Structures are given as C-alpha cells and as structure tokens.
Amino acid sequence: MTSEGHGHPHGAVEALLHALVTDEPPAMAAARVRACALRELEQSEPREVMTLPEVAEFLRISESELADVMGDLPAFEIGGRIRVRRTALVEWIKTRERRYRRHVMAGQAAAASGSPVRWEWRVLDGRG
Amino acid sequence: MNTASDDRLMYVLRHGGEDERRSAFDELFGRYRGLTYNFAKLMLRDASHAEEVLQEAFLAVVRAAQRPVGNGGYDPRGEFRAWLMRIVRNACTNVQRTRGKESRTFLQDAAFDEVADGAPSPARRAETAERVEQARGAVEALRERQREAVVLYAYNALSYKEIAIAMGVPVNTVKTLIHRGRAAVARALEEDV
Image (cartoon, rainbow over all chains, first blue to last red; front, side, top):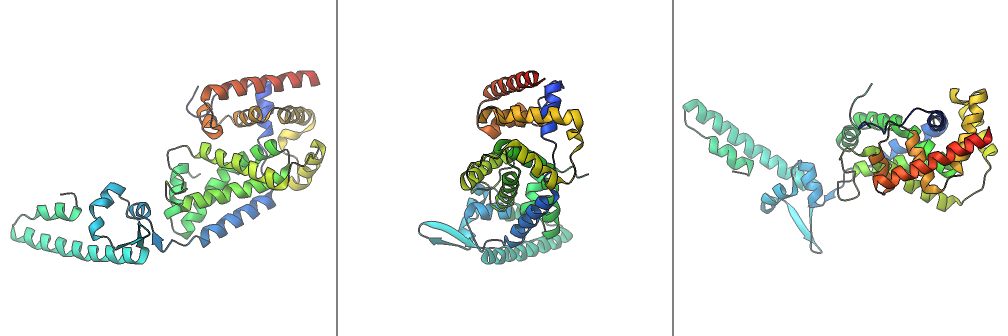
C-alpha cells in the first residue's frame, strides 16, 4: 500500500468502478459554480474588528507570542471579550516599524563607531 | 502544471492578492470538481442535485479559506481531500433534505447526462458503457455507508486513511465497508451477465 491511494488491484470490477467516477460536471454547471465562488471571494472583505486568534494569524505569530505584546496592543474589551480594530492594528504596526527603523539606524551608526548594540535587537524582538 | 499542495492553495486563497486567489481557486476546483460531482451524483442518484452539491461544497471551501483556524477555518494538516469530502457529504445531506428524495429512475439520469454533457465520455461506449451502467446500478443499490466507501475507493487516489477521515469512522471499518460493497457489486455484475 502506498501513501498515495490504497493501491487496490486493477481488476475488472475496479476498472468499472473507476469508470463511474470519471465524468466531468457539465461545463455550464462548472462555470456557474466557479462564477459563484469567485463572487464570494471578491465580496469577502477583511473584517474590521478582529479577535485575538485572528490578530495572531494576521501577524503570523502564535497566540502565546501575541500574549507577550498584549499590553502594547491597541485592543478594547466588549462583554468580557478582547477585540482589535484592523485599522488600529495597522497603525500600531506602523509605529513599531518606525521604532524598528530608528533602532536599526542607531545600530548602524553605533556599528560604524565600533560600539556593540546587539542587545537592542533582542529587545525589539520581544523575546530577549 | 501547478504543483502547489492543496494546503498551500488554501493559504493563497486566504492571504493572496485578487489574481492569486482566483488562480488558487481555479486550481483547487480543477483538481476536485470531478471527485465532488461524481461522488454526489452516485450518492444522490441525481445529476442536478450533484450540481447543487458542487456549488455548495466549493462555496464552503471559499468560506473556510476566509476564516481563521479554530473559527470554522480550514486547518492545514495535509488532509484537504478528506476534509473536502466531509464537506461534500454534508452538502449531500443538505441538498437531500431541502430538495427531498425524488425517486428519479436511472434512465432519466442517463438521458439528462447525454443532454448536459453533450457527448458521452469515452468510458461509456458500446459494450463497456453497458457494463459501466450495470456497475452504476449495483453501486446505487448499496446501502449508504457502503456506497460512500465504495465510491471513494473507486477514485484510487484516496487512501483508506483519507476515506476514514472523510467518513468519520475507523480505517478498519472503511476496509470492511469497501470489501463488502465491492463484493456486492461483483456479485451483481456476475448475475447480470
């Protein structure tokens, strides 16, 4: 047995069974389904208010890593649940980008003058 | 030919730009529309219901791609086909419930296929066609779970494990269902000779 498929014997019954599953859906129907699904795709605007798992996924970090920066996150509470506005999150990321850029530039300046600043990278990473 | 994994395509469907999402959908649709359509047609014994299942299933794929994991979203664990077939099974149940079990005869289905498909597929020619239709009758006469297992087995590309995940039963149950279902089909074919 292979990992792909069950490798059944290619007997007469198997050949007939396989012939039963080789039809293509009618072209008109396939085109209609495709159009319908693509419309759904286009309409799926990103949600304005995000949950914490959605924020973690958006940032491509784990939820426990997100917990490390929670204090800083532009979140709000509603009915005991934490939510984050997408636009606020994007602004927050921009602030962090500016901060990061300043540190990188400071690091480059320090490197040019020969002083070690590697610890700053660890702080920025939030995992130092 | 696109060699991206199904999981990768689902990721692109969620995070890609508009054109990337479109082509990811087209690739997934191309890979699995036949599986979905044929499974539904054999389970529901009705081509127009199968088209509805096709639509419902691929809308569910798009929606699952939009949601985060744990919130109804697709969980990329390398089991897309099995996951899709679970969706398709549910869609079959929904369509069956909303449209009711119409008892269309097999001949009506065949006539519908000729019109809808334009030309019969190569597998349906002359003598072979007759045997294929005998097999179809035999498969359609199987009990539902046996039929499901046998139809998924007929694809060959699906592993026993994938069939088990899709059906929500242990692998050994799948093997038993396939063994008995296949034997019943073989018996029916012999009797028809």
